[in-house]
Length: 224
Image (cartoon, rainbow, N blue to C red):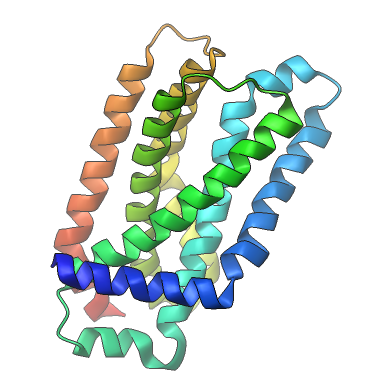
């Protein structure tokens, strides 16, 4: 399973490295979302700074939808999905590989967006270890859920519009937990709960999505 996962992840990352869709389209879109938020809230810099964590993760979530759609478009081209089914690779390995590739792309995007938040919103970052842990757990959850729902919507006729409708409600808990944990790390939290509480929720969500994907990805592939 792990060897198959490594093969699939390397394949997806090579495709993105050669096409540069993530760098030329997804990343500029995410930065543009941050800029629009800055324009909308700029008259009150205090509000912008307090809302920076939430705006950051909303931009990541929107970009994740685009990245998942891109991943599924690659699988649908030239019979790639059929080739994967007939390749003899472990479906769990295929899921883990695709989720890992998507997680790498999202994490690289988060680095860019993090710099954008510092520049545009005037946020002074702190708690780097906590922020890294939050990003890692949230990215795993988003990547796993995106891979599951991407496969689920991949066989539908209107998959481009169906995917956001399926994915966004499912990852809303990840968005909330990541935002609250990031606020605690940045010192802008207003709730009494600690970052540990939200980190625990992020960890549980990531494990649940990963476990479900490992078990259910095979049947989902057969339905496409």
